[in-house]
Image 1 (tube, rainbow, N blue to C red):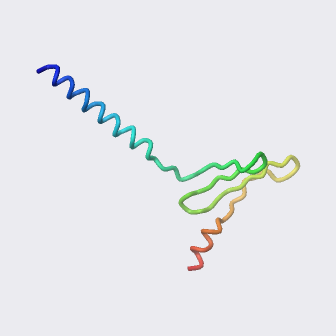
Image 2 (image 1 turned 30 degrees about the vertical axis):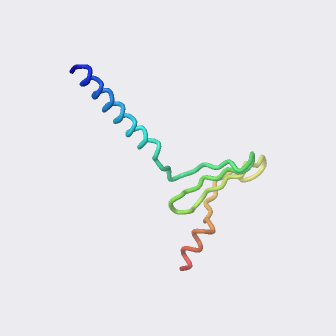
Image 3 (image 1 turned 90 degrees about the vertical axis):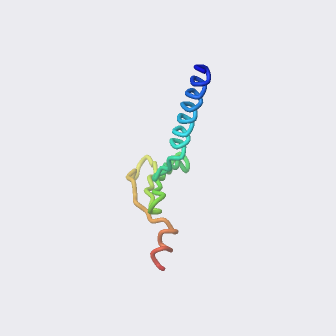
Length: 78
């Protein structure tokens, strides 16, 4: 009888751990970092469609610039 109880406890614990790990994998992040190439980086906001772009040039502006997604503009015209 004790073996059955221990087996059920192990099974229940394993099931609880598997469910919680599955929930952790399902986390969706709002921002995505994209390295287009060596000289261009993009930080994309999946919720608003906006993105920030940074060009890595030696003798120029290396600041992040906020851009609007073409998809975002279509939504505003409606």
